[in-house]
Image 1 (cartoon, rainbow, N blue to C red):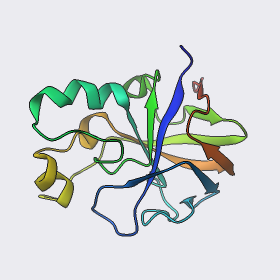
Image 2: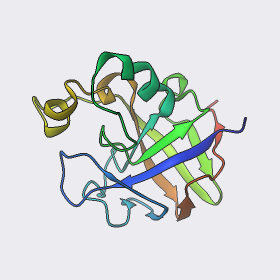
Image 3: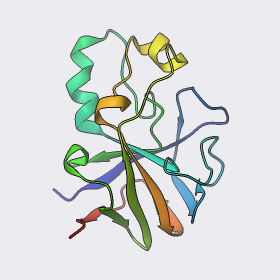
Image 4: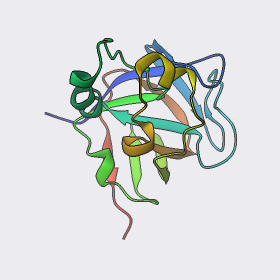
Length: 147
């Protein structure tokens, strides 16, 4: 099975769950066009593995749909937790550079209140857009590790 994008998710406001979309445009030093978190810095795009959703599901009663933890991109088949800062994710022409592992949660955010706990601090990663383009659900994800 090839590593792929399961879901692309955006929101109009910060601190809330995101809504799935079929494709997205990514801009250098910005992130996903139309997402409330898009801005220069080290948290332009957030990623979380479907495997993390699946691992967490037995601990909550609510169905963990894609984007519920505020992630922009839900992946499948990529060991995001094994990536290091500087590693790259390549999706068609788009290049994302891992810039942050995990995050500090502002307590309690709407996601934490809704789900009971957020897994982004432990299993989410963040990336900067270093090469722009358009990505779609189902696109293959390749990784390139920093030497």
